[in-house]
Every structure is written in structure tokens, then in C-alpha cells.
Image (cartoon, rainbow, N blue to C red):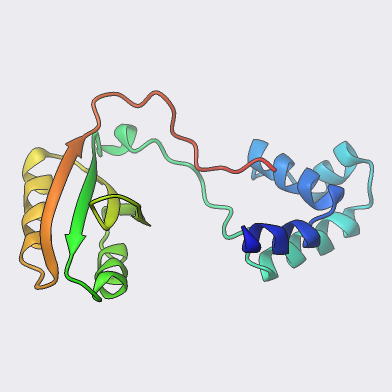
Length: 156
């Protein structure tokens, strides 16, 4: 809650409008965004640079449909980690190429990994690579059968 309050004090209405416009179309030019918002192009540029510097805007990478590029299998993998080793394990897993999210979670598992794979064999190899890590005690893997919604953009 504290970090949300910290950033909400730093965001004004123009910052929010710029973020939302970029979420709609990250390829929109600063001039185009300025025209839509009724502000000067330099205002948009300065605010965008400030939002990047603060780490609020992390990237302007494209959103790629994993299935259309061959990664049709998505898995949610719960892990239980030896006491005191969670952060170390999460950092190592986060560097793995098929992993697109690593979360600390509440409940029995310590963390949740979201990853995509081309085949079941690739997923099998990945899970086995987790199980040989010395600090991982157990995993529980869930296959995603159907994606109803997946959108990591945040409209503020």
C-alpha cells in the first residue's frame, strides 16, 4: 500500500493520461499523444522521460501472442522452497528464458511461476530442472487449458 501511495503522489492527471494512451498504442508518437491530450509535445516528452526515470514505465515492448509464435503451452507452477532460500531461488528462476512471471504468494506454496513452452517435453524438462535445484522441495504444475483474459497492461 505504501508504494502505491508513494507513486500516486507523483502522478498527476497528465501522467495518467499519457500512461493510458501508451497502453492503447505504444507506437503512438509524442506529437499524436500531445494532440489527443491537448498539451504541448514537449510536455509529453518530459513527462514520459520522468515516468521512465521513476521506473513507472518499464518498457515499451510489443505484446506478443505466445501461441502464434509457437509457445502454445502455458503452465502455472507452484513451488515450495527451503526456509530462507526463497529470494535466491526466485532470482535464479526469473532468469530462465521461458519464464514470464515469478510471484511470492500466500498459502502453502511459496511462489508461483508462469512460463510458456512449445511442447510437453519442454515443460517436463523445465519442471525436472526445478526439482534438481537444492532448495526446491516440491512443485505443483497446472496446465492452462484456455486463456480467457491475459493483459499485463495497467490502466491508471
